[in-house]
Length: 500
Image (tube, rainbow, N blue to C red; front, side, top):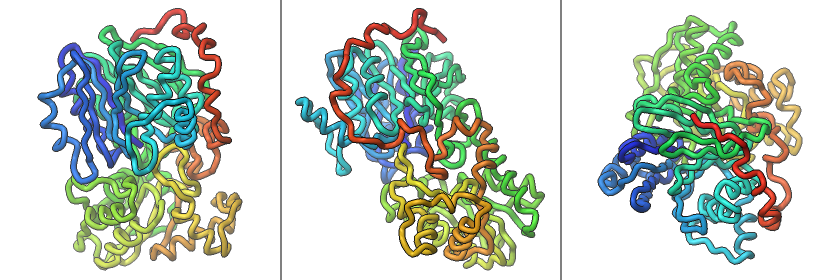
């Protein structure tokens, strides 16, 4: 998932934009970008795969002047994109995953449009979204058309002379939150970007909602469409920053509750200490310790924030290198002890096995009990870049070995009370080489988050998602071009635009 931030300031916005964007560095791993609009557009993009945002962009601040701007920490493609359109020039930053991007691009190419951005993985999705927007009768209509034709998710910020258009994807998978401060107005993926910059949350955008930020405030251009909300549950479990909140629910508090739920199901476990795999697992471990009364200690510590997340980089080689180097074991804490180690999740299992558990055993642990804060991941994400293949998931490896082949219907393995589920977990525990392994249940995870189940995306664990959001039949570009005048009759969609 990419992180996006935008600000409209009373004065120059470059410094606010710089720090607001940097507070999303825990999300993306590939590129960072900022665009500022003053007398004209100033845009800068840097490769962040081997460096941090601040070190790359600090020298650019003096060259970026204007009162409104957008920034992005991108998980995949270079952005923001600049486009000179019939609606005037604009810059665009996006967050999400468009499953049918190649089909959409092919349709636009047949219509005579061209693409300038080169990506080794195919079309630059942000450029694609920008080109799709220009097919509308105006910018708002164009954004709505994007929501209609994409499969997956896309929240976006569009920087234009009129202000910043902020749009949350139609199922609300990717959050967007608007804020107000003494310096002006801002919109963000992560609310942790607000606290130190003086912004207060004024609105969590609804699924499909489009607002315009300008010098006068925040004006609603399209209301949320009342569709089923499916915000990503993994935001609270792993992806989000502890100081952030989504739908008004704080990440750190949810993770502590996850740990408490894990401990409540562990009455038979005797241990000397509880810990969490840094960083995201620490909060789960703290909750477990609070509920169980077992002391919380740190047998593994992360060396400086300079090492990024080992889950998000696209290559296995990079993931393994980060996992191997970032965690340092403390033998004096580990040796001779029975350890409960809380982890946010087990995705592939290779890093946990080779670079976490192996370090605990290597330093003389007596027992190692692993407690993931979410259920076994069974389905590759269709909304984000987290997991792209069924074969890479630890649970699917177990099922394949148990069944002797790839199993199309894995429903028998989804029920924690079933024999199939227990066999799968036992297989994973043996493969990891741990004393015991117990996963969080879906019900306990949902309870820890505190939203109704139907408002959460649980696809990775259940395989269920809104029908319209999952990949369907190939897209017909005529859908985009059809009836371009119909929505014009809505004209701003509401009689009285709402101003915050």
